[in-house]
Amino acid sequence: MPHNKPYPGTQAVIRALSLLKAFDDARPAWGLTELSEAVGLNKTTTFRLLTALESEGMVARNPQTDTYQLGTAVITLGGYALRTNDLRTICQPELKALAAAAQETAALELLTGAETLILDEIMGDRVMSGGQAIGTRWAAHTTSTGKAMLSHLSPAELREILPAPLPAATPHTITEWDALIADLKNTQERGYAVANQELEVGLAAVGAPLFNYDGEVVAAISLAGPNSRVTPDRIPQLGQLVCEAARRISIRLGWQP
Amino acid sequence: MPHNKPYPGTQAVIRALSLLKAFDDARPAWGLTELSEAVGLNKTTTFRLLTALESEGMVARNPQTDTYQLGTAVITLGGYALRTNDLRTICQPELKALAAAAQETAALELLTGAETLILDEIMGDRVMSGGQAIGTRWAAHTTSTGKAMLSHLSPAELREILPAPLPAATPHTITEWDALIADLKNTQERGYAVANQELEVGLAAVGAPLFNYDGEVVAAISLAGPNSRVTPDRIPQLGQLVCEAARRISIRLGWQP
DNA sequence: GAACCATGTTTCACAATATGAAATACAATT
DNA sequence: AATTGTATTTCATATTGTGAAACATGGTTC
View 1 (cartoon, rainbow over the protein chains, first blue to last red):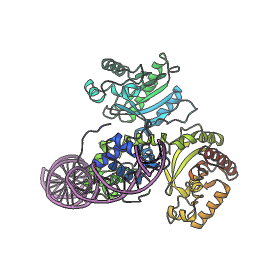
View 2 (cartoon, each protein chain N blue to C red; view 1 turned 45 degrees about the vertical axis):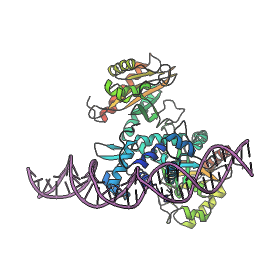
View 3 (tube, rainbow over the protein chains, first blue to last red; view 1 turned 60 degrees about the vertical axis):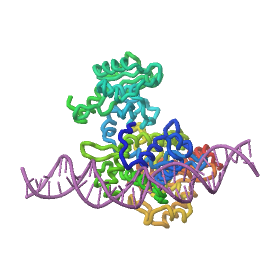
View 4 (cartoon, chains in turn blue, yellow, brown, orange; view 1 turned 90 degrees about the vertical axis):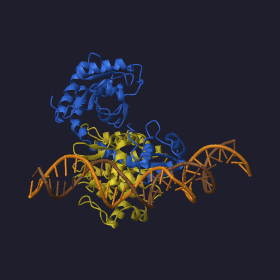
């Protein structure tokens, strides 16, 4: 999350947004005092900002527990943001085809800072209705999509973006800088990234980057599944599927091969 | 959308949020000047607020067109808001069962002011992965879920909530006050609401309310489909399905029948 | 290619607005 | 009844947000 420039005359807004961002999967409800302490704001200020956010439906209080949660306006805005995303619309047919062909989960993700953001997700099997994880972020160096996108950055750019030391999500996560650089080099040559239990034990994935009209990486798509199904000998085949789909999408985005 | 109390010391935050809310399906991208005019703010103020929103990822600029859109932080927050919603988690198994049994689309919706908010949506057929409309709002008096929830309010409460005159979404929308009151009375006695082409031509739906521990209506669920399949003679059967599911969920919410 | 128009951006003097310490209210334990 | 933890309200202060005006930029028109 970039907190770049302290622009003058925006303190209250930035603070209000920092309150909103305190709510996540791990901590979906906050009391006033705890929240003010967690965010480092005066209790009165926190109260006033929350009142403003509440009046606009961005947060809601649970009268039972006297705590705040994210409100319905956030859900509505999120829906708009998702539906009006051109990239998502463009990619959806390819994702569905990928998921159907491989019978695994296909996803579209963006790089935001050092994290990937799941923009869309289509389940391969017919059991689930997908999209449960849309909006989720993961550390980029632990995911196939993340590594696919990172593989087109220079070591200097990587240094700037990625945290040091690299956090481990599983025992298989690449945490050594040199090992990551080497893996990204392989990734770029190969055309797709492989993440085998680096984000979650038992989960394997392949991912390929999407390019825009002037050859910049704008996003990545992936196929993922349990490593019982996504086995080492099947990975080249899945990798090719993802690469082909990524290529078709990139061309639609104006990319010149 | 309630714009109730002008709480002191929150002007900047409220203004910033009003900017966010200008972005919707109909108008996903705004230039600075047009946006400032639409929201009624000084161009400089709009610029400063947008800069703050942008620094936090709530909006993003498209460098091509020099316009602003909703940013990735909104998607992430929306995902959190959705996933941490207890009601949605509780209802999802029932919605899936409903959708499978009827082979139509099942949905869970809240009442916010005079509008319903789609919290969850499961498609009945195996073609689509659902959830496309999550976050969308519709005028409550045009939907089955909306009427199911409104049917438990008094005429005085209805007067307060609903807009006058009642807007028409289709030629079949109930726009006469007395007709709506009568329809809601029927709805309450029947236990479920019927909306036949009142939101969209060719779309029919039945909806039933969900009650909490002290008998208050907290949400509603529905089954909807093309009126070629959701025919008048099939509606009682679908109505019963929805009522039974609603009853089971309400009991899980602590409701005493 | 000069004049124009419509964008976005920066500056700056001013005071309205946001701030936080302290006082108050409320509710749940003890 | 006393205590501790919450959530609110008050209010004096100056920091912060404000908007008119000036500036910059890029695209059209003549």
